[in-house]
Length: 419
Image (cartoon, rainbow, N blue to C red; front, side, top):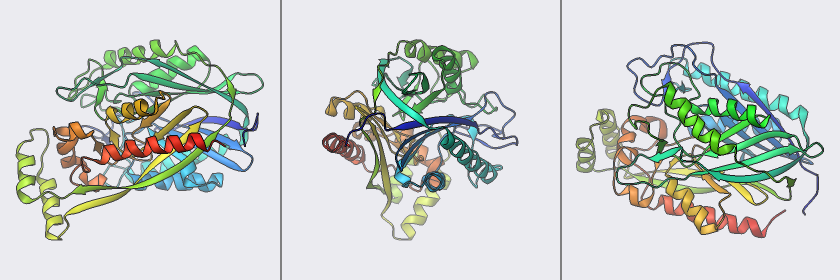
């Protein structure tokens, strides 16, 4: 049943910058130990409440946890909120200058423990400050991103935004924005902890709108910051230039507030399958690469073949968060922008945002067309990250189509079952 002024919301952010040295993750560095702090890192939490139901969206300045680690955080938060795990959605900025919170990194496990503690503290404090709310969606565009795949120029230039405001005063509580471009202006030449361009945008827009700003990373698997080298990154001038492109566009957003009529938050599961390459296929892929050492990857492929394994499967989650006419949904992949654009076009809804980097990250997930072109995002990235992601090859070529089909189907169902 639709209601009026029955929903409440709250927002809080907390510092997640370590006060100890860690390994930086996201690109090659001759010494990946952090050498100080350039920009502080934050976790941000938006909570919605109706009667005994709680929903939570969390944004984290990090490259992206494994699904297993992300689910530890989600489980702890859902327990604190007395809600289902599917009512807790994590979104990672994908900054390439953040700590690696894994067992493979310097102080990685120590940082993950700290990250969990800070996020739980953030949610616990936020829970004490609910207020009746209204929301308003807005949309504009920006040329912040470029396609980094050879021969492809497709981008998703949408800047989607959701203002959450106090029902009585209509003063904004927080504005959530969505962008699609890698947060990797800073790469190998930077050894300091940084939120990349996200932190600058938050600071500038907070000053303009007079409220906190949360940024969600979209379908950016094949999108880099505009006019920044796809392998070498850029410098501080590029960082501010990229942020300014976004900020200039975002200042044009116009919000019309209204009561929340419908919130739906849930997850759907599907199985992703990656084939184990034959010895000949693996050697061909490795021989065609000049970007990374494939020896560990070749050994992992051999180990799988020796065990008689012909494919690897993962039970994947698509998490949905519908608020009135808009929807934020995502998967734990670096999905290519074509997937998000296909969803937008097939549903005729530019406020339906299919994002990557949601509840973890298990590697690149290309469109069917780009899958066949190969390259770093399809094959070679697995040389480095297969030990984190749990598969040595990209998921099968039809996986992208199946994700899009499911999102479109669920959106049609959601429209028919508005609560």
